[in-house]
Length: 637
Ligand code: ADP
Ligand code: MG
Image 1: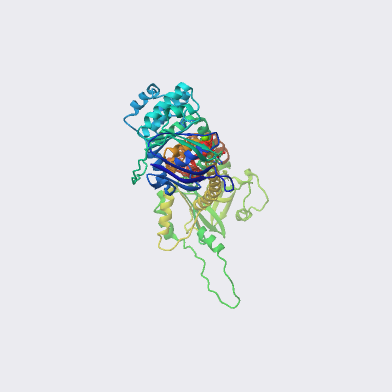
Image 2: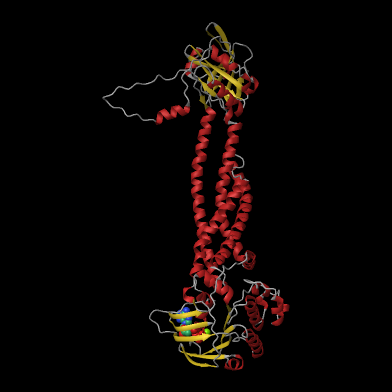
């Protein structure tokens, strides 16, 4: 039993009432509502159909005031109790007849209903291929499957030829035997022929009400159940939309993937760069020496000392510690020699007449010479041969030359080779002149190289480990020595520098990627907003069928997740493709291989981030769906 008591409706605060004191009691049967265009028929139907609320007055169904229904209850009424046949039928064009009529409900009678309506053979046809009359019958089939108590039809025959119109009217008449069917029509003949009651409206008032039917009031308290909208129905809509709008979706994905590509580049470069530098350190930097002399200090400590600023007050006395002095003696040299297998070259520095000279290593001497270009003469062949090592501009320290009694500004190679001089009662001969190759790792300057025949302890020690593992072992070994030995680890210095570069680069690159993510998220938001606007009509239909706001939101969000996945795939493929030229280019400048390198972790991060960004981006526009009023949404074309 549907009852309207003193119902008023106006759309704007200061406008006139569109509906003016409507009082009605309706039970079963076919009710026809007539009136000129603009008289308020659709407005009345919308109030009854819970698509809109009255400004004043009460609309009640089986004694329940419909104004007091909660959102979920309204969804339930639309799902279960109230069905619509709209003038334009509001079918989802890209779904088939079967999919349309079973969008919210399923029934074992679907085939029977389709046969009764004579559209069984259209069952799997897409709705956009149907004629107007066929669409009308599909809309009726949908309502029959839904099986609501009240059926509201707004000009159901308006767009049909008279023959099809009669068919539809016959079906409605049949339905009205068991249900309440309220129909707005302009066709007075149909009203006369089929309606049990004709209500005429003029300027929002009931001006005529013929063929009363007997009252039959039974008030039943209705318990509502939550509407369960099956997830596979949702996916059907989503997949159809994705396919139907594939061009737009692919374009969106491409646009989205630009942001993702920039993030991939950042993560890929960070990954590849640190791997490259690690390899570089392993292969190359690890060969740099560990340098030990009485006064060598740990570089890091030295740096810390430099950074520490001490406040000096003029009324205080401060204590200070002596600088650490390494005790390099025979015991320590022997200690190191035990680990000779870890060391590629061992070069010792001695002080002769307070000048430092270096010795050629006892390990891998042939390989050692590969660090030099022999300019003239020969390598050391006996204990008293020496080699002059020049710097890049062929200079040699004047003090060193003075030790050889050579006091001129310059000498020709010929003059020097074979030159003999005495130091500590030993006579030495210059056998060769060499120059350090570029990019050598020895970390020594111009010097004079002797064979190690000195029976004293060295002044300083250069130890070149074989590789990174041996270096680490050697460092550990030195640290285990009974007294503290401080040393300079040149490779560590380089590693610290490269770590700093990675850190600095990461900060810059990560800021870029954050910007790109924000941009992507905005873009997804805008696109979702446009998509919501484009589909307002469809959203209105979903709502009128009792599909809840959260389910409609889910449609948009899941669609965006699919687009995000597509964008991830596009961006990963593109990044992998462009990584080849980028790596070639970067190799030219840095001599580092594969600076841009993706891995599964990065791919995983990108997929997750793209999903998060797409969901975040679609949140606000998707929530706009809740605010859409069904009547407005349905009017929207
Ligand atoms: P009918 O269906 O009888 O042709 P309607 O109920 O659609 O008439 O409309 C009645 C009046 O209310 C019309 O003047 C129309 O312009 C107005 N109207 C309908 N919907 C709205 C709305 N959402 N906002 C403002 N005015 C409206
Ligand atoms: Mg109308």
